[in-house]
Length: 303
Ligand SMILES: Nc1nc2c(ncn2[C@@H]2O[C@H](COP(=O)(O)OP(=O)(O)OP(=O)(O)O)[C@@H](O)[C@H]2O)c(=O)[nH]1
Ligand SMILES: [Mg+2]
Image (cartoon, rainbow, N blue to C red; front, side):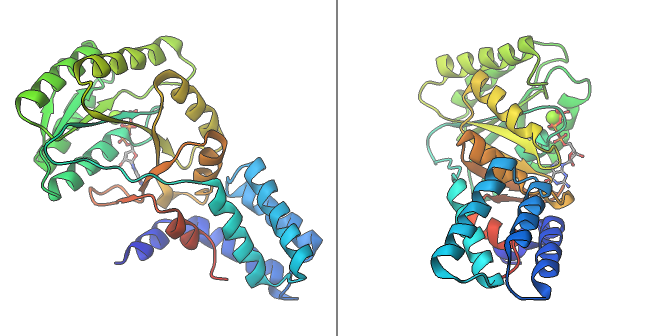
């Protein structure tokens, strides 16, 4: 499967939703009138692209039609693609041989942090990097075991303490181990936490300080994992996590299970944070670098 096909397959629900709507709207006339553009705006909102993004995109389409006089479906789709694309940025995660990179996975409960950590480990290993994972979710009873199972499946070493231990202490140990073993990529899995719980958010700050102190030389990526089925609350989550730990990139998971993949656009636009990963399934291989162009091509029907 090509990368585009992977995105297309993963985004099939959102794409079908948008495509069906657009074809229905422009079926009779082949061109868009004012009412149809209003409808298109509603549809983008329903696909969770966000109120602001949807409004702005439709405004840009109206302006484009005013300037060119072209209200054909092709013109509308091209203009829609262009304005959505201007709202999002992407970031390629890197990990370099011979130096330490740390991925700190954060997010609310059940978004896919642990799965994404494992997928990243698998990918980095297949590229020949020395990888280690740290089980800094000491809160949920089965979390350590879950990461260990992924460790075995991906043949990745896992540093863990007991349930209930201080997650910052796990991170401290993992960094010492990473230095000792010349690890090139250390992936830290943390507990899911509600962005509204101050003490839990403070705990992330503490982990962050341990990393800064113990591995100042490392390249750190703090990856906020967002579940595409969450809806617009994702924007509030992203702001709160960014405030607590300076998120550097967004991973959007479960795009495959949702007709609301537009949330990637809403969160990226509202926070200005770049998108780095797309989770398109539950398997260890179902992870792609977020590619804005492919994402939009897979999301929208062809012009
Ligand atoms: N369909 C689909 N399911 C996913 C994806 N990513 C994760 N999941 C599933 O989502 C569920 C939760 O995933 P976890 O990785 O355990 O989530 P978590 O964020 O670590 O959860 P907590 O540690 O409890 O906060 C699991 O059943 C995963 O298989 C994805 O991209 N697509
Ligand atoms: Mg987890």
